[in-house]
Length: 226
Image 1 (cartoon, rainbow, N blue to C red):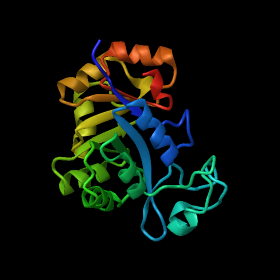
Image 2: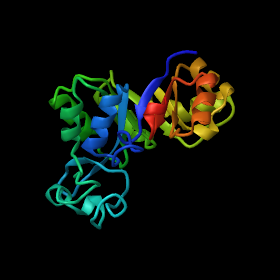
Image 3: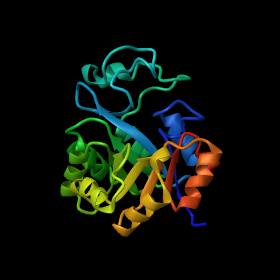
């Protein structure tokens, strides 16, 4: 059985508060290939690690991320005394220790994202991911060497439909909801030149099924199970 790429979801969300530096530190401690984080932009233009449109679920605050300045977000408790980190915070901690998979959650942040990564001279691998295919195409225009992952809830069942769906993103990798993945789909993606990744896989039985199917990488809240 081939070695799979191990990615911690939102850091290692099953073990530490999601999208925090504590979660990133846990992922580093596990020796993972990548830690995955979600990116949004604040009112004052700072890229921060947060999944939801609002801060209500994961912090003791309320409101939409885009309506809050970073200085106000930093005062919120994101779990066990952690604050909401900026992308710069995560890059500095991860540099030389672990790769980062950065999921762009909103439009028109591709340029800022690439600029921050390049300005800080981040030396670990970066994998840009998104359901927003235009964002991925923009990243590839800004950095032709960038690794990008197009995310889908599902794909067409025929090879021609798969290629027609994925190609506009100019993505180098494809990420799929784990319960939609079959060995035939992975084979079709491989034949088209795309490594296949599965999200978000937490149950041991699903992990083993995907490993046997030929998957290239798995994203999990419990990456120690991989």
